[in-house]
Length: 90
Image: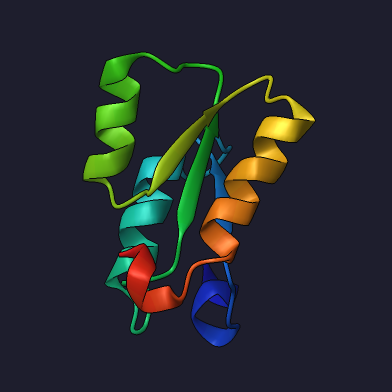
């Protein structure tokens, strides 16, 4: 989290089950930072129920990828978010 404000990222991928802070809280904190409103945040999780998707979107994430994620699906998702101008992503 400390690096998120000091470094410019094109995209962030968060695992939903991290050891010290879950992905939902991390996304909320990132969104509170200056300039993070248009930063694409993707979630990765083994839980891909509609309630999980809804929680991710409510926390400020842009999309959820279910694990295991096929390489071609990951590539397509990254291309989708990285090929858009920052203002168009939000």
